[in-house]
Length: 129
Image (cartoon, rainbow, N blue to C red; front, side):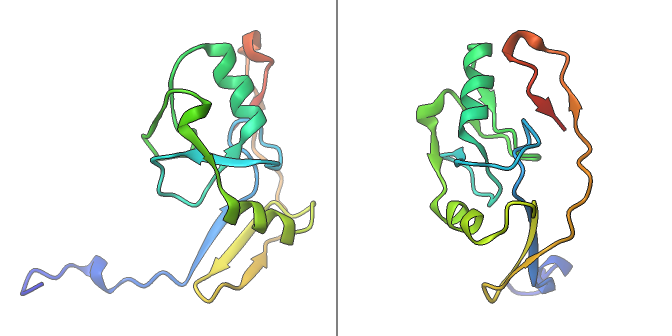
Protein backbone atom coordinates (compact mmCIF):
# COMPACT_ATOMS: atom_id res chain seq x y z
CA UNK A 1 0.00 0.00 0.00
CA UNK A 2 2.78 2.45 -0.53
CA UNK A 3 3.94 4.53 2.43
CA UNK A 4 0.66 4.80 4.35
CA UNK A 5 0.90 1.46 6.16
CA UNK A 6 -0.73 1.58 9.60
CA UNK A 7 0.02 -0.38 12.74
CA UNK A 8 -3.15 -2.42 12.25
CA UNK A 9 -1.64 -3.99 9.12
CA UNK A 10 0.95 -5.77 11.24
CA UNK A 11 -1.48 -7.26 13.78
CA UNK A 12 -1.99 -10.98 13.37
CA UNK A 13 -4.97 -12.66 15.01
CA UNK A 14 -3.89 -15.99 16.50
CA UNK A 15 -7.07 -16.95 18.34
CA UNK A 16 -10.63 -15.80 18.95
CA UNK A 17 -12.73 -16.24 22.09
CA UNK A 18 -16.30 -17.22 21.33
CA UNK A 19 -19.23 -17.51 23.74
CA UNK A 20 -21.65 -20.39 23.30
CA UNK A 21 -24.28 -18.48 25.30
CA UNK A 22 -27.11 -16.55 23.69
CA UNK A 23 -26.73 -12.81 24.41
CA UNK A 24 -30.51 -12.57 24.90
CA UNK A 25 -31.07 -15.45 27.33
CA UNK A 26 -27.58 -16.11 28.76
CA UNK A 27 -28.31 -19.78 28.15
CA UNK A 28 -26.38 -22.15 25.92
CA UNK A 29 -27.40 -21.79 22.29
CA UNK A 30 -29.32 -24.75 20.86
CA UNK A 31 -29.95 -23.61 17.27
CA UNK A 32 -27.37 -20.93 16.38
CA UNK A 33 -28.57 -18.18 14.06
CA UNK A 34 -27.37 -14.78 12.93
CA UNK A 35 -28.59 -12.15 10.52
CA UNK A 36 -28.03 -12.92 6.84
CA UNK A 37 -25.93 -9.76 6.59
CA UNK A 38 -23.83 -10.45 9.70
CA UNK A 39 -20.11 -11.13 9.29
CA UNK A 40 -19.22 -12.07 12.88
CA UNK A 41 -18.80 -15.63 14.19
CA UNK A 42 -21.01 -15.12 17.25
CA UNK A 43 -24.60 -16.35 17.15
CA UNK A 44 -27.81 -16.18 19.17
CA UNK A 45 -30.42 -18.84 19.85
CA UNK A 46 -33.25 -19.24 17.33
CA UNK A 47 -36.07 -19.99 19.80
CA UNK A 48 -35.03 -17.11 22.06
CA UNK A 49 -34.91 -14.74 19.08
CA UNK A 50 -38.34 -15.85 17.85
CA UNK A 51 -39.86 -15.28 21.31
CA UNK A 52 -38.09 -11.95 21.76
CA UNK A 53 -38.70 -10.50 18.30
CA UNK A 54 -42.22 -11.92 18.00
CA UNK A 55 -43.42 -10.35 21.22
CA UNK A 56 -42.01 -6.95 20.29
CA UNK A 57 -43.50 -7.07 16.77
CA UNK A 58 -40.77 -4.89 15.29
CA UNK A 59 -37.47 -5.17 13.46
CA UNK A 60 -34.38 -5.11 15.62
CA UNK A 61 -30.64 -4.75 15.33
CA UNK A 62 -28.62 -7.93 15.67
CA UNK A 63 -28.16 -8.68 19.40
CA UNK A 64 -24.41 -9.31 18.96
CA UNK A 65 -22.38 -6.46 20.43
CA UNK A 66 -21.09 -3.94 17.86
CA UNK A 67 -23.19 -5.42 15.03
CA UNK A 68 -25.67 -3.02 13.50
CA UNK A 69 -27.35 -5.36 11.01
CA UNK A 70 -31.10 -4.87 10.97
CA UNK A 71 -33.14 -8.06 11.25
CA UNK A 72 -36.73 -7.59 10.11
CA UNK A 73 -37.86 -11.10 11.04
CA UNK A 74 -36.81 -14.72 11.24
CA UNK A 75 -36.63 -14.84 7.44
CA UNK A 76 -33.67 -12.43 7.68
CA UNK A 77 -31.66 -14.93 9.73
CA UNK A 78 -29.72 -18.06 8.84
CA UNK A 79 -28.65 -21.12 10.83
CA UNK A 80 -24.87 -21.18 11.24
CA UNK A 81 -23.83 -24.77 10.47
CA UNK A 82 -20.21 -24.16 11.54
CA UNK A 83 -21.38 -22.93 14.96
CA UNK A 84 -23.79 -25.89 15.20
CA UNK A 85 -20.89 -28.29 14.59
CA UNK A 86 -18.86 -26.46 17.24
CA UNK A 87 -21.67 -26.90 19.78
CA UNK A 88 -21.65 -30.64 19.11
CA UNK A 89 -17.89 -30.84 19.83
CA UNK A 90 -17.96 -28.96 23.14
CA UNK A 91 -19.26 -30.48 26.40
CA UNK A 92 -22.54 -29.00 27.69
CA UNK A 93 -20.90 -27.39 30.75
CA UNK A 94 -18.43 -25.42 28.63
CA UNK A 95 -19.79 -22.07 27.49
CA UNK A 96 -16.70 -20.34 26.12
CA UNK A 97 -14.17 -21.59 23.61
CA UNK A 98 -11.00 -20.22 22.07
CA UNK A 99 -10.69 -20.89 18.36
CA UNK A 100 -7.14 -21.03 17.03
CA UNK A 101 -6.32 -20.06 13.46
CA UNK A 102 -5.12 -23.66 13.00
CA UNK A 103 -8.67 -24.92 13.70
CA UNK A 104 -7.80 -25.98 17.24
CA UNK A 105 -10.61 -25.56 19.79
CA UNK A 106 -9.76 -24.93 23.43
CA UNK A 107 -12.35 -24.70 26.16
CA UNK A 108 -12.11 -22.05 28.83
CA UNK A 109 -12.97 -22.56 32.46
CA UNK A 110 -16.66 -21.69 32.89
CA UNK A 111 -17.18 -18.35 34.58
CA UNK A 112 -20.23 -17.03 36.29
CA UNK A 113 -22.54 -15.23 33.92
CA UNK A 114 -23.20 -11.56 34.52
CA UNK A 115 -26.84 -11.61 33.46
CA UNK A 116 -29.86 -10.08 35.10
CA UNK A 117 -33.53 -10.70 34.58
CA UNK A 118 -35.00 -8.17 32.18
CA UNK A 119 -37.89 -6.19 33.64
CA UNK A 120 -39.75 -6.40 30.32
CA UNK A 121 -42.23 -9.16 31.16
CA UNK A 122 -44.16 -8.57 27.91
CA UNK A 123 -42.05 -11.12 26.08
CA UNK A 124 -41.49 -13.55 28.93
CA UNK A 125 -38.63 -12.00 30.89
CA UNK A 126 -35.82 -13.61 28.92
CA UNK A 127 -32.52 -12.95 30.61
CA UNK A 128 -30.34 -10.25 29.16
CA UNK A 129 -26.67 -9.39 29.68
